[in-house]
Image (tube, rainbow over all chains, first blue to last red; front, side, top):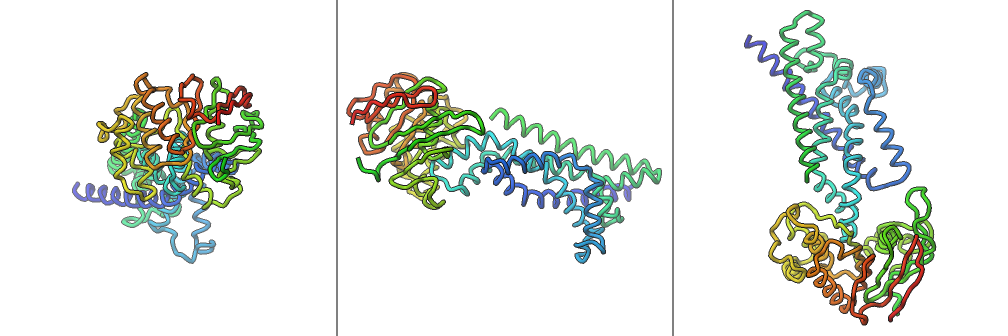
Length: 218
Length: 222
């Protein structure tokens, strides 16, 4: 029984590490991109926003397949040797959640943009200073978008399975383990892991909801 | 009238997205003293103010700031000119934090000394609530804080959109006195309003009457 708990703990921590890395990666480009899209109200930025909105429902197996072809030995980035590593999963998940982050940040910041950006600029802020003001004013909205992205990364299966390879003790995460244990008929571990995944997801969802309410009543 | 102390709109047209023009062929100059723009709701006053305060780019026409065509100038020149101009919304946005944080904001981003904050706050009647969180303020107090934040860094051009809209009679009188005081100091102040505001006649340089996106009449006093 103790071994089971240790295994569940190890898989959970690995999942958090891989999806956390993916979220940080996605944040690093999603926030600057969103700020650029928010600050430029032209047709191109609207088109890009629509494009990211459409990508939200991208099937994870399609993304996993595309990444597999790119990262496999014969692929253009095969020389990096990333296939079947935790970093490959993180990269895949970061791409997967980028549309969620960009869409949530741009849509929720749109109203704030009109108020905060205009106020900061007219009070003499540079565009950079206005961006800082916008991020500061929209901290709750930002955290909400980040948590939603993290939630999606933790719960996805396709990318982790295809580019991670579900290697025990290395790339095995909650979702891939559940899938594997089910096929093996090992329902006990699958149920334990399912509960952990559901708990994680619920905590994040409740946090998103409470942040949303706080934002709404500000 | 010195051209280096003016903002001039030349044959300005403006539309939001691809809608019909909400401003049509507007020409107006803003100089020292108080310029009043009067007109009913929806006549285009706010849009005109946002264009003159360099927040919106006109679809046609030019905005000349102190002799420079603003939207043709380089980014650095635009930023330099923008720092002289402030627009205050009818329902101004206050940043998270205290009254002090808000009034100090324009000074902080310019790297100026913050010692003026307390004096200006007192002048605008918000000296006793400097440490109050802005979420706790009434609409009228928010307006006063926004105006204190506007005048704290001594801008050259101030555009006020319905500045008395949320105020009681006492605060209306206070704001009118303050506007007159700063106008006497050489700041060009433009007030867009649908109300009758009784400024001292020697302060008012012109009154422009707007209706349906055009200036229908300008009465000059200076």
